Image (tube, rainbow, N blue to C red; front, side):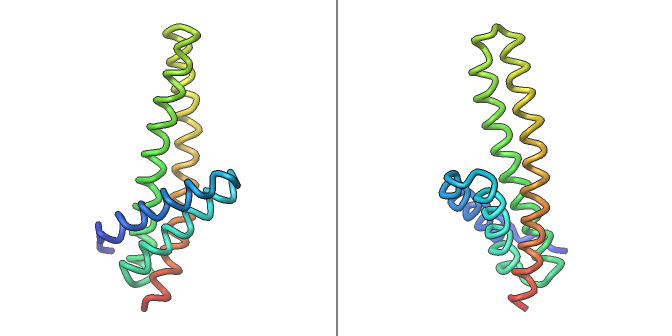
Length: 120
């Protein structure tokens, strides 16, 4: 399995765009973003194994970025409850973010494998 960083980067950007549009459909839109972004990364990488790997990486990176941003915002908003409130708010959001990262990674890998299969 070779990592094609161009495919990963483009897949990541597609996930961000589709995810932003998918905010109106909270769960379906985010899962769709992972599938579509993973598909694009896999298609560009080529091959089922490479497609799944590159889709997995693109999905993981997008999940990590969203988790860090959400935890930062949650921590800042939680500061209204004092320093402990900020820590607990950020940590709780971060745990949810880790679950979302796994969700993005798995469906992105599936989309990547399909994209790699189609590309040949």
